[in-house]
Length: 335
Ligand SMILES: Nc1ncnc2c1ncn2[C@@H]1O[C@H](COP(=O)(O)OP(=O)(O)OP(=O)(O)O)[C@@H](O)[C@H]1O
Image (cartoon, protein in one colour):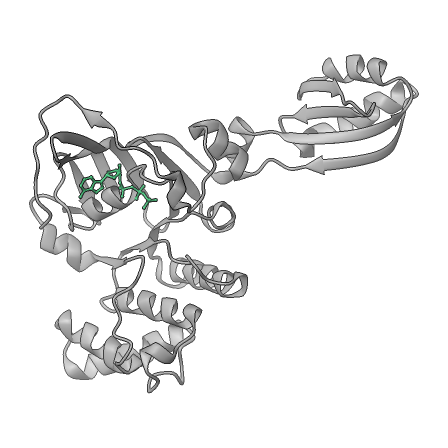
């Protein structure tokens, strides 16, 4: 559904060239929900803007929903929906007016456009809010309206830029439900950027991590955690901690075993589901009891830290410095 080959974008900033995106290759299958993650300044928005025809690549190619980005940008626009980070709704318009106008912009005739408005209000749990002013909606309702606007023309793929930024946990959960339903009921492919790792974990089938303009990892959340992070088991044992440590260090599935400063044992496991039983069985076989046990599961935060050396935070202080290049940049203004 999305296929990009060596997508590259260089900006000229004063006398310097900034390589914002440096040869991105990506593939998203129909019906997938894919999360696009990266630290501030990594190249997410630039990639997203290229994939949605808002910015011309310096080089590289892409096909979206079967249409070529360079030769058929109009066709791409017809087949995709794009929900920008801050939406674009008029707070003084009525909710149904906004949707109707959008439908008409896509040249949907009047009667079907009216039907589509009713359908979308229902689909996104906005039924009964059609005659409300956009400005009077709650944050979650407004975000759902933004998504409804992106869906007016029934696109095959929707790009969501930070869909739940600034929403409370309840509204975020609600939006995740709607996103899943989009895929389940309509087969829509979803490509989203997010700064929330729990969101990527809970919602996405696959995650792409971009750093310094290049994709540095892509896999399912489970596999990324398995490969790049670890579960940590901390125990208080009834017995000799040093003997326990030696015993556990030799078990398959145990990456590391250490005695903590308080005399406990800390074991790093590739996969706790697999390893925890082996640990307990080995200890009890050696006559060592376990008094207390605590498990910290690997998180995507750990994965992110190990990949980029930084935490993923929406923090302007955390801005990455641009990457100057020595190559002559071919500056192409935004369309
Ligand atoms: N119009 C521009 N002119 C010059 N440099 C730019 C321009 N747009 C983006 N950049 C630079 O390109 C790099 C990538 O920016 P981009 O906005 O794609 O990152 P991002 O991953 O979306 O970051 P954030 O999470 O902060 O939104 C940054 O160094 C940014 O300063």
